[in-house]
Image (cartoon, rainbow, N blue to C red; front, side, top):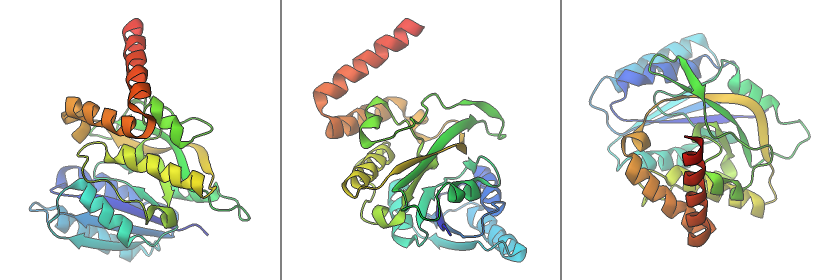
Length: 258
């Protein structure tokens, strides 16, 4: 029986949070811990969260909802709190506005692991992009490979963060580097995969869309700064020269396609 911790970091998120709460509540898999790490929101976020908790409890769906609300220093600090509090075998980050692809997503992910199988270090899948109304816009441009490794991300973040389920016992020792403002998730995923290689843990493709990702977000709003920071992350893990030439090749290919 696989157990999950879903981590949702919030701050003044009332405009987009409800779809995320509804998506978690509707999950058919009962063995779910939902951690809501709030940064002391000043809007109606916490009222919304409390209503969600009461509704979930009344439905007796087996989910356990835990809420923390206190000032913090930003998104990645909140996500580190989530890692520290997680008790499920796998943890996944589903931020305000993002939703699971279907009501049985967690059940499908759990059933992808065989009873006699050693728990993979990462379970991963595809991602679709949706608009504010939850309407499908497109498949994510970068698609996960059949055989993922930490070296795969030299071509970009091939697996969306929300479709990347990390084994909690590994993630407990790997926190987000809060020196990064926009790309700590890329760095974290790479370090998780490096740890999996050291521990001889498999990275397993679930072969399904796992997340509907809300178009936009912080990295889109600060696109230039995000690109600069992501280059630093890639150079740290893969070397400056290789990262530079990969980026040049990527932009040339994009130009030829245009």
